[in-house]
Image (tube, rainbow, N blue to C red; front, top):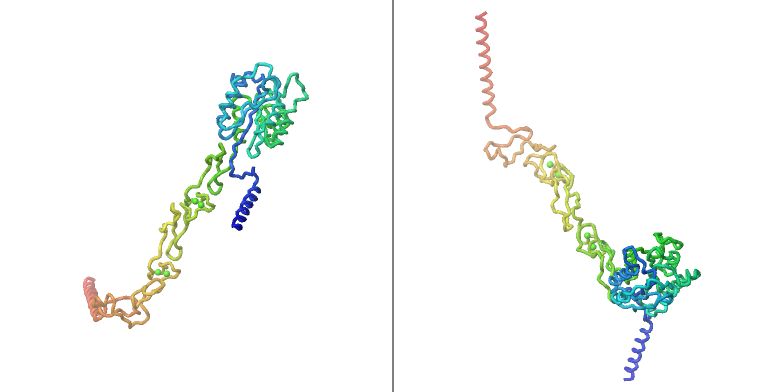
Length: 437
Ligand SMILES: [Ca+2]
Ligand SMILES: [Ca+2]
Ligand SMILES: [Ca+2]
Ligand SMILES: [Ca+2]
């Protein structure tokens, strides 16, 4: 019992010991943390000016924020600060805490426009207030701040020395690990300050011109928007940047990675992915296993020569079918045939008129013709003549085949009789011609 008790305590100690080595906030690639961000919206009186659409800048900004928060509220926990709050030059205040699915709550808070005069732009003080908002500092979650302003750092009476105070405030926030996105709305913004703020907030566009003072300079470091459409576009761009996502799938072979987004703490489906397909014989790695055309002999439509050009033969082509197999048929080929005595290499083995029995027995194949063998007395009882009862074969040296046996003297006699007839004919003609002369 004592031993068991000791073992239990020892095991417990080991478990706690190991656990204490794992940092609480450690998160690997697979951990899904929803991004959270605080929108800081300028509620100065200049936002009541009429914008390009005919609505006030305030109305345009509220609509653009609605667009972003509706589209990303399950991927980003949005919160809202407006400044000044409640009015004049008071620093901004968080009016909606960061939380999932917050778009309608945020819209409800934005129903009241700023007064037409009397609200100033205490940008630096508001950014400092945001730094004190504790939920932004939950270290394991990606957090950001998004500032939308249409003006300059400004409180009444105006003090030019305060112009760049927002830059320092943004730098402080970024030093705490919270990037600050800067959006300048309309041409009335302090371009130089906003460029420096974007740089200080860790969100400047790569290669931007930090000294630019022109709101239309495409090299500005911050996001410039001049109307509702422009503002909607930059807010969407920022949301896409801050959302916690990760690549999914693979870039192996024909596949292409997609992207998964962390939404309400759960990874979404992999979108924009090109997934694996069945491997076919096409020279590509369709199933993305790193091997091209495994199980294929060839690529569909490919051809290769087959057969031989030796002797009388001619090469043909084999075609690869859709299963990646070479056709059995060697198209267009002239195949080897049985060797015969003809001066040609019929069986395409590199030898002309090779092999046994090319000619009948007693004959041999010489220079492409069957000729009798050298022995004149040789006769074999298997020839056509024997079967027809003409007797023995002609002697081999003859080189021709004639009928034999008693026929030759009869021919000689006929020739002799013909000759005698001719002689008597000439003599009669001679006598007749002698009488006439
Ligand atoms: Ca393939
Ligand atoms: Ca493959
Ligand atoms: Ca041959
Ligand atoms: Ca031959």
